[in-house]
Length: 428
Image 1 (tube, rainbow, N blue to C red):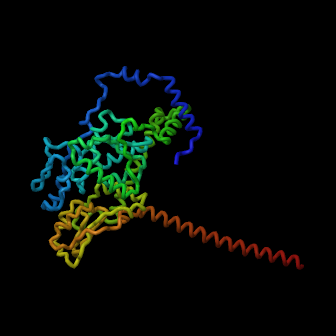
Image 2: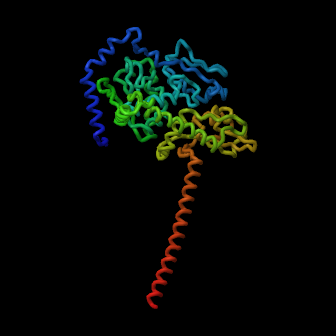
C-alpha cells in the first residue's frame, strides 16, 4: 500500500522542481568542467578479485578424503581449483574471478576482500534502504558506471542462498538486473545455474521473491520517501542551526542509512556472543567453534522473523550412540567444530555451527551418523539478558498489582468504617 502523502512531500517536490528550473544545465556544466584525466570510467576489473583459500577450512584437507565435498570443483567454470594434500590452490591463469567458489563453499574456505557475505549484505542493504528499488547485476550486464542503487558483482551467482535469505527477510525491493542473452553468452557457464538455485531456495525459505528486470530503460533510481524526508528536514534545520553533523544536509539520509547498517552489524555481533554464552565457544578438546558469516546472517534474519524457520529445510547429523565407536573421525572432518566428543564418549552436534555439509556422515566408519531434517527454530538464539529484563519487569508489574489490590482493600475498609460511623451518627 502506498504511503499517504503530506505537506512535507509536497515541499520536497517543490524544492526538486525549483532546483531543476534554477540550474537546468548544472550536470552538463559539471561534466564539462571536470578534468578528463580524473574522470572515472567503467572497468570490469574493479569489481573482480581472485579468491584465495584458507586450506584449514576445506573439508577435503580436514578429512584427507576426496569424497566428502566437490562443490568448488563443480561450480568453477574453468577448473582453476586444485587440491594437493593439505593445500588448496587457485590458478592465476585460469581463474575468471567470478567468485562462484566463494558462495558454493559451505565452510567459507574461499574468500575475497571485496565480496565477503557481510560486505555484500551491507552494500545491498544500503542501496535497498536508500532507494525505491535496488538492483543486483554483473559487469557484463551493466557495462557502465553503476548508479547508487546498482550493486555490480563479477557474477550474481556469488551470492549464497543464506545471504539471499537474509536480504529477502529484511527488504522487499531487491531485484536482479540481467538483460536477455547476457548469461547465455557468458563464459562463466555455471553462474546461471548457481544463482537460480540460490535465489529459488531463498525465496522458499523467506516466502518472498526477488524481482527481475531485463530492460535498462525500466531501471528506476528514485530515492525512498524516508531518505528524501530526512534530507529535507536536515536542510530546514540547517537554516537555524550550525551543528557540525548537519553542515551538509545531503548527508542526512546517508547517515541514517549508515546507522541502520551499523545497528545491524552490532546485532549480529551480539547474536554471536549470545550463542557463545549458550553453547560455549570451544569444544571439550579446546577447539574454537567457527560461525560462518552466511550462518550468522541467516540467524540474524531469524531473530526478528522467527516465523520463517518453518519454511527452512536443512539437514544436520544425528548420532546413533549404539553404533558409535568414538573414533573421532567426524570431529576431525568438521572445520567449524560443530561436532564434539567429550571425555565420556558423548557425541553432540551444535546445529547453529553446523553448515549441513554431510562430511561427517561420509567419513564415519561405523555408519553411526545420518543426515536428518532438524527444526530451524533451533537457530533462533534466546537473549538471556532480554529474558531476564522481561522477567524482572513482569515481577515488578505483579508486585505493583499486588500492592494496588492491597491498597484497594485498605481503602474499601476505611470507606466501610466511615460509612458505619455516618450511620451511627444518624441513629443518635
